Length: 185
View 1: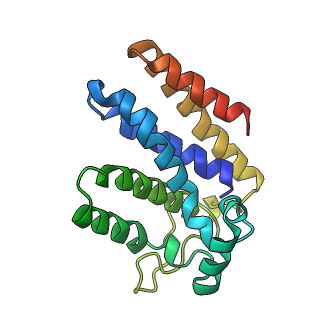
View 2: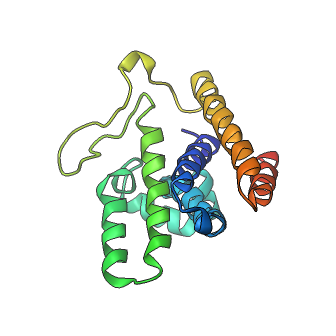
């Protein structure tokens, strides 16, 4: 999937997760956790120097790409789980921020499972290719089908933002920030 599609999928996943957040903590969730979920939703592509995040962190991306292939370790289920376990063991308060980042990484992986390539070795060390759709329904990265999927992700996202805007104090700020973000795409 492309950067925009990964961000949209991460946002819809994050907003859905935010809907489960107790109402008193929702503003904190949206201001603190959503940016980390968004970062996590593009982070696994750090293994590809030509990706959006790879171009933002070229030195680090090149080192990772020399160590791992694209859709390698950073795309395996064990990567966000390992990061979450380490955060749970060594961080007290900050672990929830790391969990948000890991949630975004899993949303990225779900997006890649919709493509023709899927994720080989997702359940490393087992040689199981992870895909979520039958072969005929999977799409090529950046193709017209992905763009349509992107639109179908965006429509519920915008509906959810509208709903939140009408139903909780501070929602207008969240909707304004997210709409500003999408205008700058």
